[in-house]
Image (cartoon, rainbow, N blue to C red; front, side, top):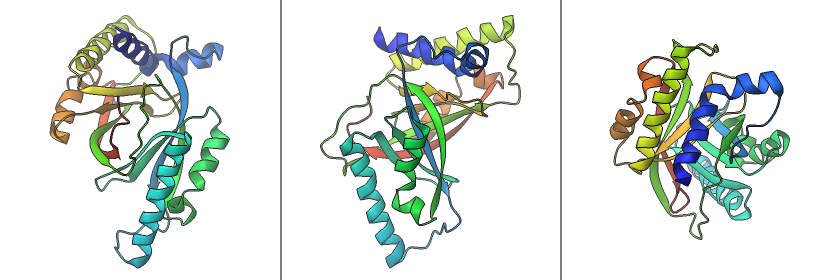
Length: 235
């Protein structure tokens, strides 16, 4: 029941958070926690080359990411295992954008110019688990939900009906234990939220994400990535 209530809150926020914040500037009245999410993107000194310098940087970055998790500054950190512009994600346990950016910019890959950071406030239930072995890696599938071609900010009977269908689908995927993490961004950008699937392949993750009525209607669109994260952290 707790999972279903959380999914309910998340689904409502994915559709309505920026509008509500613009109207009354109040934080959402749900049992969600505000984190800061850092999206690590290719920087001015990005390279795919594998050499002594990049191998050293990779080792230093892995150690730094583990230190964020072990210190409690990050609830999870992981890299994307594909060739997209976004290379990885930190979820940081702070409401302060300034503090989150300082921690992120202290990353070896950011300090070197290999990557740059894009910061977003992000809401989710505090469900990440502790791990004593952050060096052990598992694969999940991380989906970004963006505004689709049919996105509109107006609240209408059609958008309300679509929201209910979107919610029902999220609850269904959570009950199947396929959808393990989701939450909305707290700023008013094209990025609406994220969903994380623990399934056997990216094809399966994409198929599940495509069952979302909001995606089918073009209100939202999904961008899926294989995500390598420490074993045992995801709920």
